[in-house]
Length: 378
Ligand SMILES: [Zn+2]
Image (tube, rainbow, N blue to C red; front, side, top):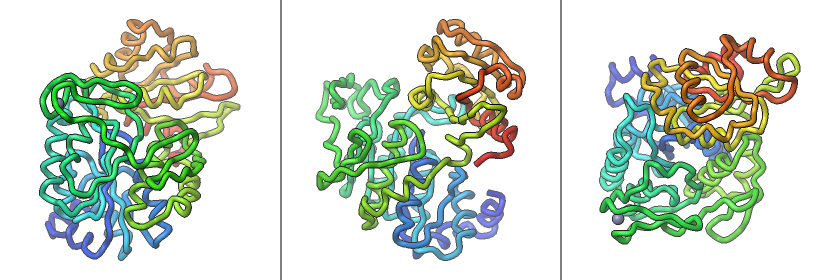
């Protein structure tokens, strides 16, 4: 990022110049963008070399440095922080923009969800040539993308509904049933999705079903895979060519990595906001679980979001807690009726759990701390 920062100070048009001549896909949303970017880059690899910021440096400095390092490539897939999407669209003139989801994130820094949807909507209105690949299950995303001329809808599900209870168009309540949603006060409703997850695979717009075997766990990642296939198809990549490449992704910057230590199979799951905690609980096995919470700058300083997360799926499991803000978590678990034990180090957590699977769910810097303990596992 430092290289990109210096480069942009010297030449404010550097990102624009580095992007010129490449066919680019941007991937944005509150959750899942790092994994979806990795999947999309793998899928586009069918066509030739792809530049990508695969380690989550998702602001213009990170994009500049990723493109500079990659040299001349015909393609680029860039993960974009949702606040920067409008600017990065202006500077990189992407062919495709993928919009995954919008939900509350770090309370002291992130924009309110409806404001973010409005920013996206305005940005897309200024670039009618862009092909948008958007999540039909998220009303905020649909509202942001609905007026675009070229839009392909995918269905990746939406577990977290608390940020789209009311219609972004008219403020009336949104109702949901059988995978559909609709506004009770205006015509906004779930569009028909062309790409959907079905059983262990993905159904494409022609109605062909593709078995998708992934190393990454959970329905969430099957949804991310469907998104990547939809984006790659906009570049002419057929699912049958792309699917085997998705199976090659084993972990993404340490996320989902599995490490053996002292007879424990430790798996790392990153969860950084309420929606992603729900996803982590969905992916985690019923096994001893270590939760670690920090509240440093990259995490956001406000931990009140802990009360937005329902920790009850952890009842009955052995739960260990650690991290700078373990006591905040302790109070939350107490209120949520989840039994736990506080440990002060990662080693203590490993010793406290029986041999076998240990699931580790941590927020951003807590995750990095544990990853460092495990020798910067990728
Ligand atoms: Zn409405």
